Length: 120
Image 1 (cartoon, one colour):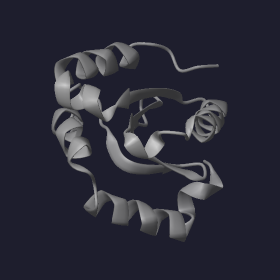
Image 2 (image 1 turned 135 degrees about the vertical axis):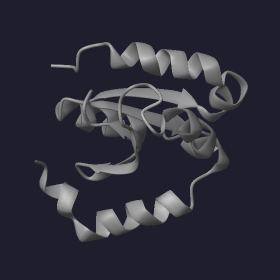
Image 3 (image 1 turned 90 degrees about the vertical axis):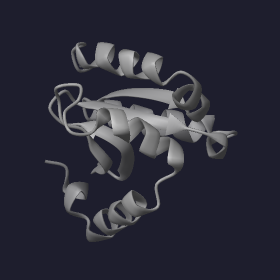
């Protein structure tokens, strides 16, 4: 298990983020929670040095939502994704507007990604 899972500051920040979540996260969470896709997702889940938006531990799938705050942060996002992949996680990203305007399509794509093998 990655030592950062037990980092008290990271866990504290993840708890704070769960209460401060943006509306778009609440929209997607309404479709991921309670095993609606037959697997358990966690919100604001620490993995390594990062806090992921949503993670399915069983399938090693991370779902990240990107909005305006990610404009100009492509390099940072790529570094983050590369690190998470190095820990054998699959990472999928969706724009906030896609969640708002095409929620069923986003959920269908997440469902498809749950059937894929974790990266090696």
